[in-house]
Length: 255
Length: 372
Ligand code: SF4
Ligand code: SF4
Ligand code: SF4
Ligand code: SF4
Image (cartoon, rainbow over all chains, first blue to last red):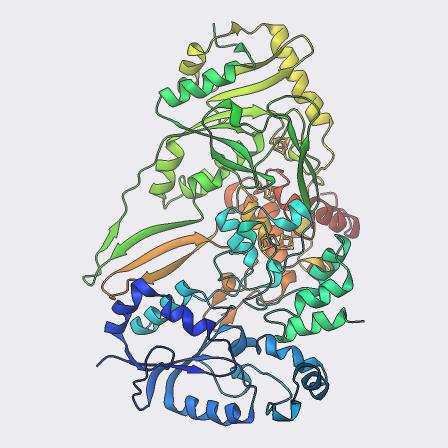
């Protein structure tokens, strides 16, 4: 019997689920090893739970989601969160540090129709999770490796060291050192495949804080290199701005 | 009479590239790419970053015009020869369901590196001691190392981050090369003193067009090295080994940790850092598995992970591990320093932490060793 795989969506843009569909060359082979039991983005067929592996995309942003994540957890043997929304609250977590009512009134013509919690929070704030895949969106190879690892019963390879390691493995010259360009790489988890520095751009922090991120020391250096406080506030409030370490650093520059 | 070396014209570099290619070598050198120097294959001497120099300081490496059209005013590519002999990632073996490992047989393309610097030659020797001369020889390393032909260049203009003089590793190459060049950039003539350091180098030197070097030529070359040594702005404090062994519990480690990002850049550019980790990958159908090795760093949390958790959770303990291993425990382990004074870790640290300055800060803070 093939293990049953389910893919769930909470508050998110679907980009991470798309990453699974993006595994075009591998998808058929994968489907021979797992039974795709619930994946509305790909098929309307639904098999009842429980599920062996659940991929959970999106953050908890509404009362309905608050209840539904408990059901998903109860139905899942192994629960893997996928993406910046599920692991850090996503860009919708920008509201966490602001007045939600005022924001709604600014953005929507009829704010009273908006039925959302005041915060957008990661899945792990609500239920225990077994593994987390980071990124906005997640990395295809990491997703495949994680599924293959679980099928084999080995630990998935999900590094928590810096993006700088990826730069140096690839031989990418550092944009901070060669150009004084702001980069979140030294405090951001590796895993994206070195997408931005490789093309001469600073890291935006999509994979969220690495372990022991020294955001304060990086911010000091970026200030010394010419960034102003507002650009630092915005830099740390990006795709994973809801992650506590980045949120705190962003707020330090919000004066 | 090539024992004493030859003087070749500047244009002779092109012949050198041709001769190396004719002998089956892929020719590599530092090239300018994305505003930095990186070790890459070259087709011709035209590809060299002629007239370029690094304006380097802690946390900053910028390539600028050197003000003259010398070939080798620059010094080091971001990463050294390590990339060639111990690549960042490599497959160690694959196996199927029978669990019999299939190794990729060690094989290496012959590569000639033009412009290997004295510090990098010592670094290569340091790596060779680790990978090749120990009880567990790494056969892949040996194959790659033996396929290297090294054309050293004695440094004329050290970068501001260089401190090889104080580590006794440069700016003039003493050994470890097949050919050594000293660029003689003089108003009346621009050329190179070429000296051989191996039989293969001697054979090539014979083939190079030039004049036998005179005692005066060799004197001119020595003067280049002396001027380079005199221009060196940084130095490692003396007896840094003893100093670090007295500093295990010093509060200065916490002070460094306030600034250090634990990003691992320093170890990833260091030409002697040799640590790696292994990772297993499996095929889509689950029928085969592969074991890969990739560079790791004592600055990552996973590096010190043992049953029950990581040993070095604090950045202070990671920085201390790195610096103490480089400068002190390497002596116990391998009978030499693990630092060759190339200064890469200083320039390429995004926040400009300077290993010589940190050593000096410890020296200033600690009482000198008692007289025996
Ligand atoms: S470019 Fe960014 S991620 Fe890469 S080494 Fe520099 S600071 Fe680190
Ligand atoms: S010393 Fe510099 S390069 Fe090394 S880990 Fe610390 S911040 Fe990164
Ligand atoms: S510790 Fe720094 S200066 Fe010493 S060899 Fe390594 S990179 Fe070069
Ligand atoms: S450290 Fe010395 S040998 Fe190395 S590049 Fe600088 S001057 Fe040359």
